[in-house]
Amino acid sequence: MRKVTAGNYTKDPLYPRVERAVRQILETGDVVAPVEVFMRMDLLKRENLEDWRFARIPYLERVIHTNLSKANRVLRVLRCHAAKLGLKESHSEYRKWGKGGRRIHLRFSKYGDPGMETPTTWKSSTTTER
Image: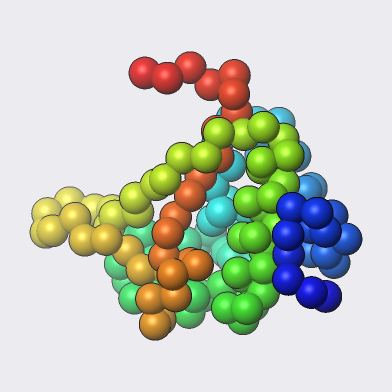
């Protein structure tokens, strides 16, 4: 498949899985986070996500059950699908969970891939700002 664009993302083989994951997330909430999509697609286990959030794992790429190229493709399809649904893009910051110590920024990829290191979430337009 060629590069994912707003015009062809629905033809991508990953689209049905991404679409299903987003639908499931929006049934119970109004914020779509990429890590949640990875979990719903069975590419990331909750235990591994928690280990990453507590900085027991140095970067998320290590525990995602796919290669970085496919993970980036999932993110591109997700970005296009969220735009089609009219979800509002919001940049997020992932910091270490836990007591004490510094609140360090968590890494997504081993080499700091810009496509992975700029975390974004999408919010339903029905969400009220506080």
